[in-house]
Image (cartoon, rainbow, N blue to C red; front, side, top):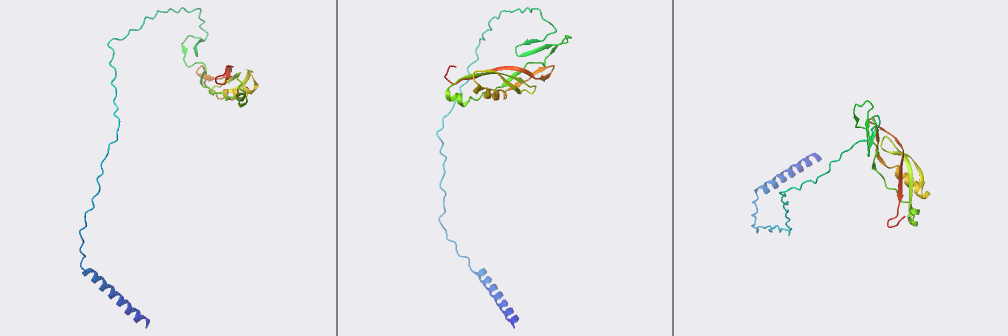
Length: 199
């Protein structure tokens, strides 16, 4: 008995929905009222007060070029030169081969690249004490320093900071025969001064 009632109910609901949809379709469209058109406000660009920069023209090229002053001719007469020795020219060492085949341009002395400033000891700074440390170290073939040893100092309180600074130095290593080599016993004097104070 439940089946015929549920079947009857489903048919009635379906017919009701069909009738409601038909009524909605046949309904007249409501008339749309004319509303006042909405206008967007005008946006205008206000230029900023910018300063105009002008590029000054290059000055005219002078018509006359100053002549180079006369340089006196210098004549260098070498004293006795030993062909079998190395000639030291400032920071560059030029080697002459013993068989006189030419110069070895790869050879050269070590050159400092970076020297870290030492840290002033706190005790000395508080007391206003100046000092110095003389030490030696080895410049390695890699351009670093090692084996820093204090030779002399004004006070023991400066020695440890001087060694720490010296071990941070960087060098272009010495070249002999085109290969980098260690340079032992490189000496340096590191000064510790307080600004505005004579030591």
